Length: 75
Image (cartoon, rainbow, N blue to C red; front, side):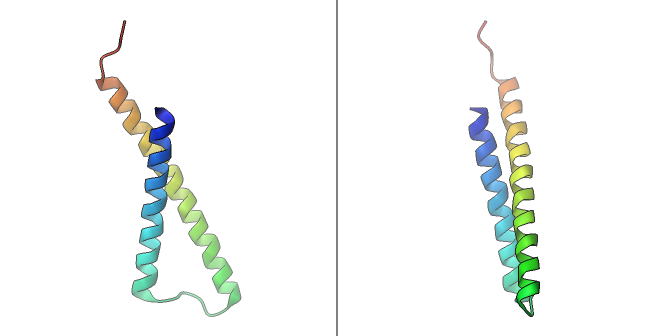
């Protein structure tokens, strides 16, 4: 069950990061003039999506831990 929370949290974090990056790109236009700038931006986007995965996984783990504490345990 913990893995499900981690995966769902990571997926939600990555989707939120991607959505935020898409929104910024659509509002302010392309941020590149050539191939080098475009390659740099791909690295930035991938880094932010990985950060979203990590933060989402941590949030998923925290939610699982809090839910686990509230549930009565079998003796």
